[in-house]
Length: 630
Image 1 (cartoon, one colour):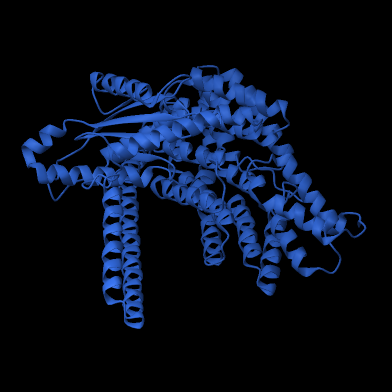
Image 2 (cartoon, rainbow, N blue to C red; image 1 turned 180 degrees about the horizontal axis):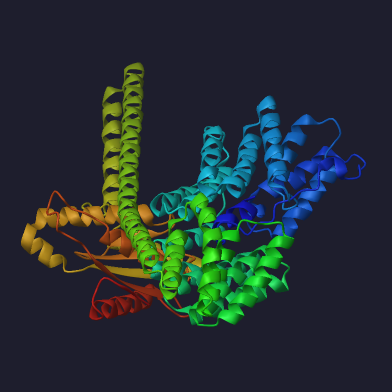
């Protein structure tokens, strides 16, 4: 379901999704099949395998479910309807919405909450196609409410990705990225041990829309080899389309055209009409920017024909806007204004400020060319106001993102503290029970002296064990000690060689830490170190080990991690460090970190890998600090 519905918010302008359905009563009845076979296919449709399945494979499984649906089995029919409403066979939005409502009511009647949530997701999709993206959000909120306490982490993760995509589409990038992070956690809770590419592409798109092009490109470039390796051609086409939009917004139309042409080739080769149509729209805009209006008009004509064949009118506003811009490039400004007049009410209904700004900018240029200076000035003022709103919103979203990330870290730190307190309390109760047991035994046996000696010996053993444990932990920051690092790194290197995996080390050094100690004092410096370590530990994976090996020097052991993935982890640590605030010390205090990354090679020891990581760290500092080097 995630593949078919989340892609709506990744395409331009809001959907490249053909909706349609062959009604169940129009399908020739099939002989009854064992219910167990239905359950097996259903699990494939809703389970982890669905996240990586192609649309074609997903539709084939829906066909199998329809054929396997047992007669007079209301529970399985409800489950079937809850996924079938997301089929690409739906062509009529009104009928699709009605079918989703029926599926929702049927699920309510038997108390099947997971099916209720899936039906609400379908309903959200049709609401978006009918009324616009913002109107689709309430049904996704309802779906998440329905799932509370139901132990459906994968489904919850899929819905969070869809809500994040929609929030990103309407400009709420900070909340979108927060939903993406929650979805990632939900997928991990469901046992999915790999990154979900659709989620990563959604995050990249949100960063693009927020103007953070470097972060977005990094996500897109990381995803592409994985998509190619698993032959996810739909995901690859979406990746290239979004990369094209990024280049277009960054003022590189030649790169945008190349990306869109690649997306068209991938989509055409694999029969992906939806993504092909979206790529055609992007290609037309790149051609207009490259002063190729005739080619753009031909591209738009092809796109319009294909959208009409798919009975998809969701892109009519952009077809009109781009058609008008192509006409304007040819000097046909009066005709261009007619296109803009038709596009404006469609864009106003959609509520996308960016597209409205582009429309007003294009309208102003054509009105000026026709000598209608008063109208041109009015249109330009509307464009300028929209641009100001967009910039204000982007700055607001960037600020909100930092605030949300800070709040998440604070909650994580608080949860860790509460867990530690509960663990300590439980240990105290255990210790008390043990002491009572010893006392009872001493009274019953009469061996008071022997009991006292035994208790003393037991306490000494406990003390020595605690001392050994403390030697493995840095008492100031809670990070592992150098001794713990040496042991863990050696074990990880041996394990990764045994299993033919990769091991990477990160060498971290807090920039200009001596200046912090000199200016604010060592107690303040200690607080900075402890807060920085907590921020890093909140972002590291469970299997990663963070150790303090010097005053402000740290190292992270990353088992089963190639250098590229370790580089991404290092960038997250760098971003988290720069986001830290120390208002209780000095509101102006900012902390930076330089990071070196090294991957173990054949014949390496821990010392040689660490030496290369230290060399990369030195290059990072030489290059200006506050960066990651491999």
